[in-house]
Image 1: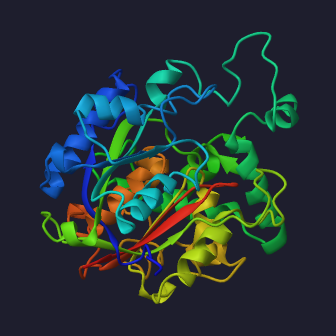
Image 2: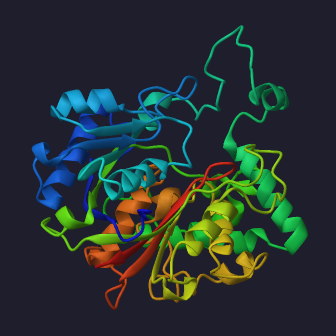
Length: 398
């Protein structure tokens, strides 16, 4: 007998700590705040939690603030008795931790899994500029692995690596900066309706086009905003989910595949990424189609990643992402596919994917307040990851 994940796992509660720039708060304290909110939201007690899952875990060397808390720290802080737990960097993107939790409840390893993601990159960077990976090691540092081939050329972060994908898309399909701008412009107008967003002031196309460049074709507004904050979601088995406070959000499909090389710069098609394989897998595991989706919360660590997700998920043909978003009407709150309704990571703040999943749940539960999509959306997709990392979830309100 085969147990399928789809239809046997649901999201039942969400929580989010204070989110801001250079809060100076202990990252474990932020994590506990988000977790306790998620428990309250679901109407559960700490004694109900028997699973714990996170990405990436307690420590990521060379990336200050990238990891806020690990499984053992949160278990100790909340005094949890666990039957199952999981954490680690090598997962299918940030949502690997949620997909793992779905598998755990679907197979009976746990009933309620608390999933969390905490970042404190804003405080960690201090008053100086945002550091690239491996550049904070001090004098005498010798790069190893993939970084030995990119650091000598000044490519110290994903800004450079993802810009390469965007530039290839521009060359092959004629995509323009004026088209790509609409990811950032749409994020900003949605952020204006979100009191928790970091940047809420109006942004025009002229503002976008005149700001300083970071890595061609990316300007400053194509890059997400480092913040401090924690997000938590509770994944429950379907039977106990029926007794929680919110209508369960059933997981109707997941994508975690990677069929190309696990590399930032040696992918077989540099107009797309591992998200191509994850998206394809998700639709293969569901009877739903892109036409059924009413809200899309797609990773925008850099603007081009959101465009690449739109193509990979089939919301527009391959190579037509620029034309699809041009003018911003289709992806607006009242458009055919509302995109990143909380302001995304470009204006709302870089909560590393989990913030987008949190927003998808808010929208499906009708709790988006001023930014709520009309007509009670019932189906949403949330996707996270870029380069060789990708994971996505298809959610439906029960």
